[in-house]
Image (cartoon, rainbow, N blue to C red; front, side):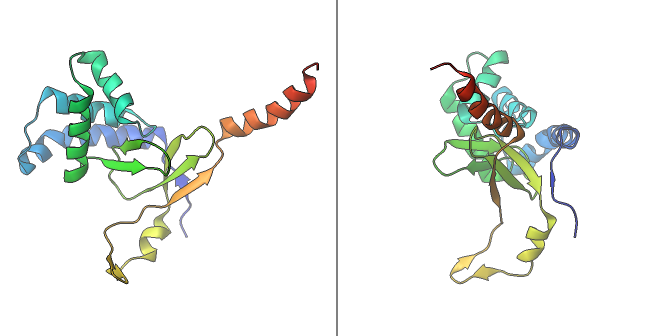
Length: 169
């Protein structure tokens, strides 16, 4: 059994560089015009390691292209999801977040701060291998979401009780 691991920054940087390098060719293959707005959105999405929302991607795009609208960014992200250039990660009770990593992977979510990280669990893909359907459902892909507390939130939780006891009443 291979080890379950978080996707690290170096892997993500190599992956992003490769995807950006191939982006124009993939757009041409799919009949999608390569516009400055689309290049800016894919660049911002691949540069992020935190599964940003449309608003966060728009803010990053506007740093270099101040006239790009939120509606344009939203439209581009939805189109990218439709053609496989991005993945929508919509967590329960949260806004849609987007992921530029379209390789098979899963997510670990901090239930306190809502940060999301990619995680590789190779055995999950094997679990459904060769299974075309589950009852009336035709299987398309599988994504596991693991709820956890990140290290930062764990430390904050440990400090909180100590701070409550130290505060004069």
